[in-house]
Length: 226
Image 1 (spheres, rainbow, N blue to C red):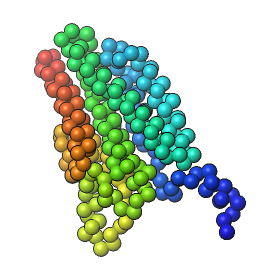
Image 2 (image 1 turned 90 degrees about the vertical axis):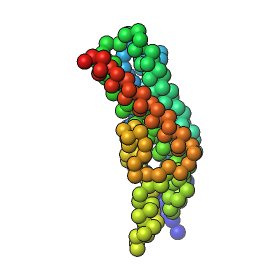
Image 3 (image 1 turned 120 degrees about the vertical axis):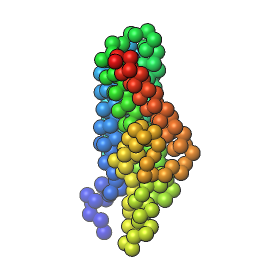
């Protein structure tokens, strides 16, 4: 028989898992993107700079509440909406940065700082997308015993197949996707992880294109200054 307190906790959180991955690293990453966007010059922001910070604060609060209540389906949908807002802000700022070059509307120092901020934002945003979409999302990954149906083949998955112990509960966490995203933006290709899904290949192409554009802008501006 269950204790009354235990039964009530189960009733309040029917979808929570005991070993659920904490969501704060992802929220921290997206919060950093919102902060970097707020630090951009006004000319590189589509509308008031505070709108992304306000949208992040509201949506992140809703996601945290839903996750604590165990309503993972609604938390997943609101999380997608939050990621969509942040991604649109990133792309809009990059377009405005490109348009500002011929007009010389941004001073060189601010231009280089803005390009660096957008590059970091690119890494964080796409790491969040990979974490959010891979194998149905974090909650679906936690429910499965093995991570075999994802869009990425991580080295641990191949190593564990050869291990005598054969661990059955390994799942990628946000740091794994952040490492993958950093490699994609730096080397413009994945390094130790194979890409299996078409949607993942498409996202990586977009991320690499954004990173390449920013790097070219930085190099061109540096040569121009010299």
